[in-house]
Amino acid sequence: MRRTLLALSMPLAASAIATGTAFAGTYQVAACAAPTPLINNSWQPFNNNTAYLETSANCGSKDVTEGSPTTSGLAAADILQLNTNVPAGAVAGWQFITPSGDKISAVSMDRDLYRQAEGWVPEIVDADGNPLPGETCSSNGDCEVSGEVMHTGLDTTSLAIELVCDPAPVQLTVCANGFSEHFARVELNSATVTVTDDQAPQITSTSGSLFAGALVRGTLSGTIDGSDSSGVQYARVYVDGTQVAQQPSACDFTRPAPCPASSSSQFSLDTSALSNGPHQIQAAVVDAAGNQTLGGPVQITVQNSAPIVPTIPTVPPTTPPPPRPTTPSKPTEASPRLHILSVTRAKRALRVRGTAASTLIGHVTIIVHYALGIRGYNVQKTVRVADGRWAAVLELPSGARTRRVTVLYHRSAHWVAETVTRYVHHAPNGAGH
Image 1 (cartoon, rainbow, N blue to C red):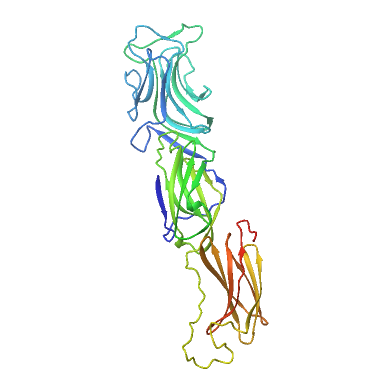
Image 2: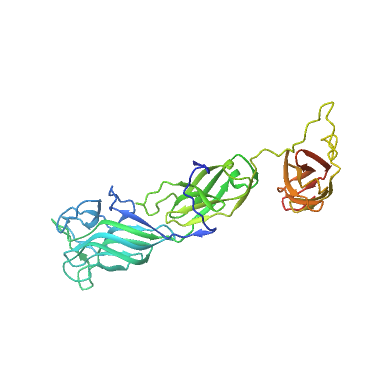
């Protein structure tokens, strides 16, 4: 497994996306073609009669023409210096097969199809055995089709360059074989196959605190597991619809399925780089063709700041100065000009109403003390006093239990209003108990 740290405070190449699946569509697989090294990992040899036919791989070799005993590229030919002729039905060559559900839509290649004896058929065929346009020797006598060519608009699961012994009914049931030079051969000197993939990759699972959805703080970790027939090229994490991390797989585009069929990628998210409050986390996987599948959003609520504690003045000295007429003699006592009228329950919230002396009190701060699990927290809100009255709605997380409500007169000093104790349980479905 690999781990990626989501350093959200660092500049990232972020991109906004829509939920669902995005289809890019194609990828290319090269064999014996640039860039170097010239290798073949995608075309596989086949031969139903090794006594008469041979296949060879000389990827990147210079094209060798006509009667040489050596063929270049990916080749198939009759075996030289045989004592008997080749029986009908003998076939050998090289084949490219797409991953399950994918199709070949185009091919660019440098090939050579050659024969100098009747009965031999060098050709390039699709999965149904149909020759591509111009890719066969159908006329009598000597024949050669060579050079670079591109075929587009294909819709097949495989391609094969092959040499077939197929004598006409009026001829003998054999094909001639060469003594010092090949009577027939096929060569694929280079090829680039375009594979169309419109299948969405799968997110097989997500796990860890990153995808659990809860009231969170600090660093979260999570794992994204994915799968696809052409392979998983990337795993990604999105926060609020923006890509913040991407982890690549080891892909090799010389293979029909370039990337690993399954992947497991680990990520870490430092929530201190996010603002406090709700955020949406989404996992994504991308296949070899660039098709992206985005998982459903998981909501987290970030709370990294320390719990809010109301500021209450300490007890004054033994001989305090004479109090002002409009303030209580002890700052720990409730202000006679500030009262809580009611505390009512709403869905995941409390509505608090009260009165205040409008000529003296312009704003009040309401503090709700609640428990979540075994820990205690506070949430507060400052509102204006209008015509001697004030009201506020304070949202609470799912599962919170309200302990008490306190209101402060917020001016040059904090004077505590009456404290109302209300035990209210906000269940995960929003119902109160």
